[in-house]
Each structure stands twice: as C-alpha cells, then as structure tokens.
Image 1: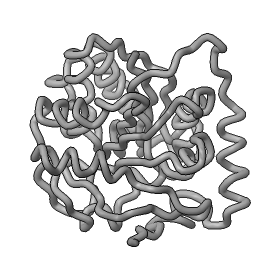
Image 2: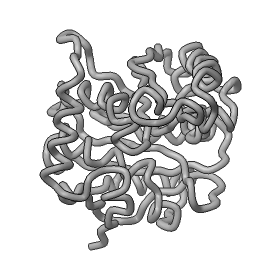
Image 3: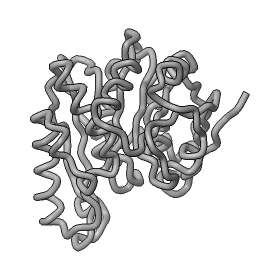
Image 4: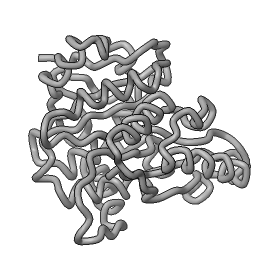
Length: 263
C-alpha cells in the first residue's frame, strides 16, 4: 500500500492536527448555508494558504458538509505548478495523508480514466503539488469517514478533452467534482478585481474560450468544467470572491480567489 505524504503541511495549512482541525472548523462556522440549498454536481475552490483563501474555500466546503452523507466520492482537478505536464495525470497512491489522517483514493475511477485514455498514471506532478492537497483537510472534515477522492492534475489540454474526462469521472452516482484554481496573480488590487470580474463573467456565461492562461492558474480544469457546464445545462453561480488584500496580503500585489457552484 502506498501513501502520498503531505507536501505543504506547515506551509499552506497547520501541521499540528488539533490546530488544523480547529482552523477548518472555524472557517466552516463562518459560512451560513441556506437550508434548502441542494448539493451541486460541481464546484470551484481556490488553493492558496488557508490564511489567504480559506474563507473563500469554506463557502464550498460548508455546502458539502450539509450533504456529507450523500457524497460517495470526490473528483478533484487542479493545475500542476511544478512539473511540466501535457494532458492529465492521476495519482497511483492508495491513500493521501494529511495531519488529520489518511484518505483513500478512488481506484475504480482512476482505472476508468486511464483505460479511457483520458489521463495517465503519473505521480511526479502530484508529489510536490499543493493545489489538490490543500483541499484534503477540508474534505476530511466534511465527508463521511472512508469517502474516497480521485485527484487529477491537468496540464495543457483542450477544454473539450477535459470536459470528457470530467464527465467520465462523475458518471457514477454520488460523485462531486471540485475544480481547484486561483484567479489573477500579482496585480495591483484594483486591476486584479477588474481582470477577475471578466473571468467570473466568462464562467457564469459558460464561455471557456474567454478564460485566458493569465486569468487562472487552474485554467485547463476551469475551462473543462465550464465547457462541461455548457453541455450539461448547469448554471454556474458565484458563492464568494476575494483577493489576498481582503485577508492578510498587501494591496499592491494580490491573488484573486473565487468559489462557484454549478447546478
């Protein structure tokens, strides 16, 4: 049995289990979810350090918490920041570990994507990657114990090909899709908000071709999800938006964060 150890514990989120669980719980407690809001098939979440994007990410995870018993598995897609990658890659590990314990991977879903030629088995881009790892402590807090995840990293890939992968990945009942991405990077706050507003419009109007590589670091997953939303008739809705200047960062060089639901 192989276990991927945490790569960014103590950097993007606390390495102490009690501190980490307390932080996640406090972020979730800060979100009020309408009692009649249904579980959506897909969401977008940011992936910066919890001090920066945790409140925005919690908009999604509080909604998953309200339906945790209905979620059979979670398909995660995000960018590969550190390893050059063409196409998509799945982790071959049996489990991923965080300070909160281990979470199983969805071997059936992984094999489905590999056999379909939608993704390759490749651990190299997963080993240092934070975009999916930072989602796992939130998932460990809101899912039923033993609920598996299927992490996928995406390099340059046409939107329709990613949409095909995502459609195959969520075919089984009870699967929820999470697309991990931040928005603009290192622009002054006012300029970032203007750029991010255009990206948000592109997502809500289901126009993947209007999302540029400088608009979102997880552009290939986001384009794929937006294309899938157009196919499936899902309506994207913005749940929350912030820049790092809204949390603890300086306003002259910010990163944008957004949370969406697709229903």
